[in-house]
Structures are given as structure tokens and as C-alpha cells.
Length: 418
Image 1: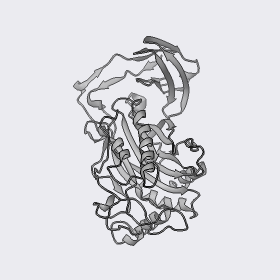
Image 2 (image 1 turned 60 degrees about the vertical axis):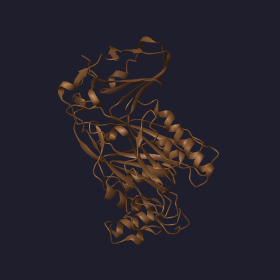
Image 3 (image 1 turned 120 degrees about the horizontal axis):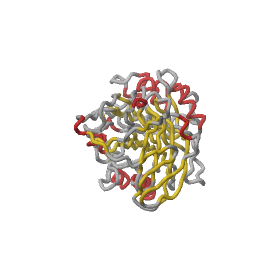
Image 4 (image 1 turned 180 degrees about the horizontal axis):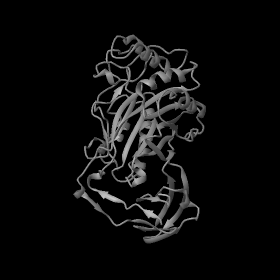
């Protein structure tokens, strides 16, 4: 007999009885990888990866799938766990560009499943988007699923009005897309933003409180990051080199804050199920006393010479790292109430009520994030029914998602073997 898990609506978005993990998130511009002018950088990156042990690595300046596989198979080789990579898709935006760069993600598949992946088109390069869900140990026994939405960006580089306007246009694409995410969605927005000051329109747009989902800078350090008088200098991320090495990357020493990880406002609230660990955000290797110098000129601090050398040779950017606590939100059982299920399955018939006439997408995936079935169709306002193919529901535990530009509903399905 088919069993369905009743969706619970829990006050303040928290879950009862959820397992807890602390994870590390790392964002890194890996400098034209793997086609830069220093060979064997996957081994250099391995030293950095071994130190941080990230559960999620968000990558910028990736040139091809071979580079992604090198990072996955070589740079992560020493870590315990099962790591997987997103699908590499060559840059689709700005097809006339002769210098295409892409973003990607590597994640700990023991902790997360990849439910969805894709990209948003801009005039410069793609914004890559990934939907992850947390693999709670009790998932198969009825535990709820935490989803979060990850966006990795590499905004237009260089100073000047035209470049600043291009950066603004790119983040406006993200702001527009936010309206299609679930209310109160958990968001991570990371990458090389190439911003010079907090007054730049692109930064203001990212943190605009009127956006569908409000983002927050975890270290909240506004100012002219490019100025010699800015403090604290420990948050600066570029360049690791006082002058370019082997003709690749930028020089100038550490004097810019180009690299960021932003989080949705709800990830700073104690009640949420994904919460930022206070004071865990840092620019790896930067002790704050290395202004306009190579990162290797700042030895003697908390970072070993080996790590500083690896950072110097790997890229002209420093990685950004932070920690998140997953499964921390708790409420009393009295706070939990059931809501009439808006998405139901009777045999092979999917039933739902919709608020208006519009196009919808039905997406069915397994708990490893693999797509089993996808279909686009038109729903009318009111009751709707869709007959699913016979073989779809034979795939075991599934996540059934119906979404449009205005609403989204999710149902977990457990086949007879469960």
C-alpha cells in the first residue's frame, strides 16, 4: 500500500526532531582553471581543501569540465566522504565572448542531494543556480527535508561606469529570479563580485530590503574597500600577488574585497533550520597586515608558510569560508499544526488546487537529486489532476514538486518498499 508523508507547516519554519550538522562553505575564484600558466594546480588546491575540508565548494573561473573533474578527483582525494560535482555546462551567456568562464559546485553527497541545477542568462556570463537538500539521517523514516538555494556568480570586472552598470544588470537578473523562489527560502549567493565599494549599485541591489528574499552580508563591513584607509583589511581577498606570476592573474597585492558569500536574512535567525555560525566568516590567509603585499610576505601569523604558498600559487584570489549550522531550529510539539495537503496522490493521479490560470512544471526527482520525470503544462484556477506514467512511481522514494511563477508545492512519496 502506498504511503504518503503529510506535509507539516511548522511555526517559524522550524522542524521538530531534526538531526544537526555544522558544515563549511567555501567560495573560490580558481583563476582560469585548469588552463592557467602554472601546471599541476590541482595538487596545490588539495593543500587548501585539506585545511578547510569544505562540505560545499563554490567555484569561479572554471574553463572546462576537465578542470571540474580534476578538482573533484584530485583536490578532494584526501577527504573522507562522497563528494560529487554539479554538471558542467559551458557558458551560455554572451556567446560572442572569446574568453568564457563558468561557475560550478562540489558538495558532500553524504550530507546533501542536488535537487536541481541550472543557470540564468546575463549580458556578461551565466549566474549558476543549484538547489540542495539536506539528507537528514531520518529522511526515509519521515523526517522533513530542508532545501536551500545556491547562486554562484562572477560579476563583470574592472572599474568604470560601464562595468559598474554591467554588474548591476547581472545582479538585477538575480533579484528578478528571487520572486520565483519559495517564500522565506534559504539562499546562499557567492562568488567573485568585483565590487570596489559598498556604495556601488550592484551591492546595494543585492542587499535591497525590498527584494523578495532579503540578503545579508555576514560581516557587515561597508566602506570603500579599495581605499588604503579602509579597515579591517583582513576581509580583503585580491590579489595574493604583488605582481603577476607567469603572466597569469592580477598583481597589486592584497588591496580589494572582490569575493563574497551572502546569506538570506532568515539564516541569521535562531529559529531557522539553517543558521550562520557567528564570526565564522573569513578570508583564508589574510591576517590583516598584508596590504599591497603578496600573501607570502605575511608569514609568521596564524597561517602556515605552506598554506600561504599554496594560496599564492593557486590563484590571485583568496577563498572565502564560513560555517552553517543545519537542523538547529526547534519548537515545541504544541507549535506544530497540520495544514490541508495542497498536493496529493491518488494511485497515479496527482491532484492539486491552483490559484490562477498559468503554466506549471511538474518535476519528480529521487532523494539523490536525479530527475525522474519532468513535464510542463497549463493549470486552470481551481482543481487540477494529472495522470503520471506507470513507471514513474516505481522508482522508490521520490520528491514531487509542482511549481510556477507564483507558487510551489512539494510532496514526498514513499513506494511500497518503504
